[in-house]
Image (cartoon, rainbow, N blue to C red):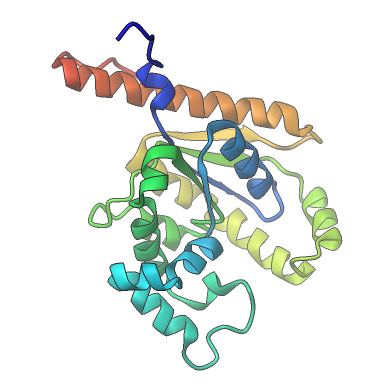
Length: 231
């Protein structure tokens, strides 16, 4: 054809997860990156909402089991249903979700999971087979800003934020070690010091673009049967 086609790089879908302390800006960053990279925004809550749909439960045993747990007894008492089921069941639903056509073609960005060291170990289990291109770890948000945001939050109580902050402080290095060992690509994004959203978005964008370029280089090398470029 005489028409020029887009480069393979432009078609490479982004796969990422964003970790960080409570009210550190994970969701805002994920939404901005999804708009920019045309990715699917995934959270534990919307993955479970998807799993509860009849089309999902009929095609996935994991989704059917999640639906059974979430609709039995008093399991659903609040919109934050992800806290009501085990991480293993949530991960089974996540695996089913990212295998759908929209996630495969557009890529996805996961926000809000893993939230602790046990989550990270479960997520990186090779048997599960969840592949993540890059992990963005939001770092250095001062505790005073965290608590100020907690007081202003309409979604979470100060106590909930404090509990999540303690988990992040005590388990973040273990979380990052598990994720780094599995995915070899954990990038620190500095959100401290009162930085505006633009330099934070720039840092995250660079990390995603670099990851996508490396994946494309490896794919091209495999296709051409030549040695993959060194990182």
